[in-house]
Image 1 (cartoon, rainbow, N blue to C red):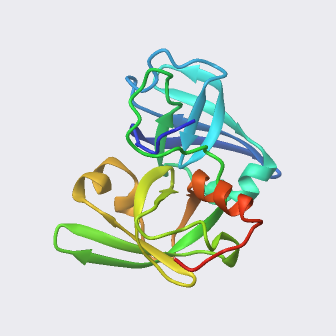
Image 2: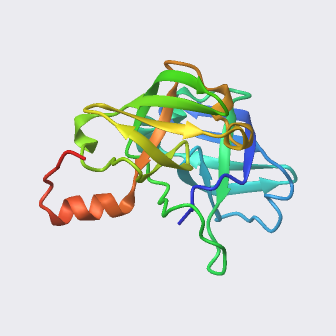
Length: 201
């Protein structure tokens, strides 16, 4: 389980692809990798993956075809900046929201607008996620726990303060860029209990 509070931004240093399967090596701050071991989890741009190799200053993960197909990993490039968060320890502080690291879909940036001391970003979302995204609710984009500002029929927006832009890879996003999206787990359960019905927020 993760909280959506990004701990570091890593850099992709190697991608070895074989069909849709790949092994990705990411350079990261040594403090983040302190006591990090083979078999441990890491959320990379919101995708929960397992370390198969850990060296000083970097680690390697296996990416399955299903994961690649469902996430932005199919477009991942050398030197790309990625948001990183280790799994939450049992005695850790819980400040974001429950993030499973299981991406629902990818979506694209539609609008980027500066608003005084913040940046508002608007994203599109598919009809299958209607009812799972509500104003003032939580959402994880590239693994980052954010609050939904507004919701429309097929788009929603979030606002980012300067700290969020500098501590994540959001500052590098451009209109049209793809991101990983995970809706709030509680919204999924409520929708399931309602038999899959959706209601306008």
